[in-house]
Length: 217
Ligand SMILES: [Zn+2]
Image (tube, rainbow, N blue to C red; front, side, top):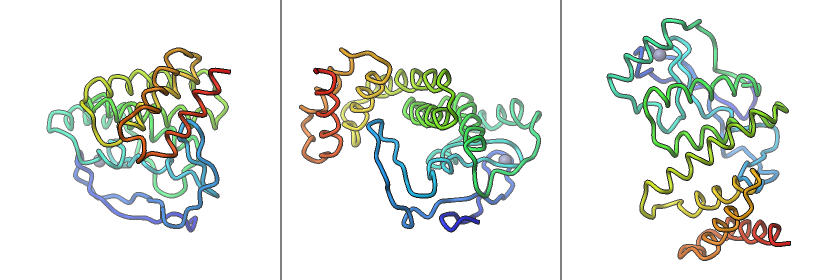
């Protein structure tokens, strides 16, 4: 296996069976580039491919941070909507872009069943759009960017100020910019530049200034 990867075990909260999944040794990674949409390019691996944990036995999937968050009612729904049609297959080991996409789409479907928070949907859909970008599928890339933007806006509206808010505001600006909504993008970049916590987030504020200027030219 790739030296960046290692296997670990967990118990599925839906079917109760133990399985092996693959994690990334983050300490071994070297950053090559951080793009304006905050996609981070590392040397030799795409660590975000490995975030969704997928149970190979029943098909339940979720981002690492929310894998164990599931109600009894949602477990029953996963069993009836996914497991009954599920063909057992492997998700551990190295993930190709297609395997990563399959993991994220399953995770998204489970988020719908679980009625997850908007921020989980936003994050999942942004990453799905990155994978479609890697696969050269522009129509789906744009489709998932739009869903992600809508969910980030809902996540922002649904909260008072919170840790990481500035990053969320910045992403709303950036996704608007990519989607060609210039005035909206400017409005959100301005919020970043004037945010009370701006001194703690110098990279994000620099990005917002660059993007604001690029739209003003
Ligand atoms: Zn399972």
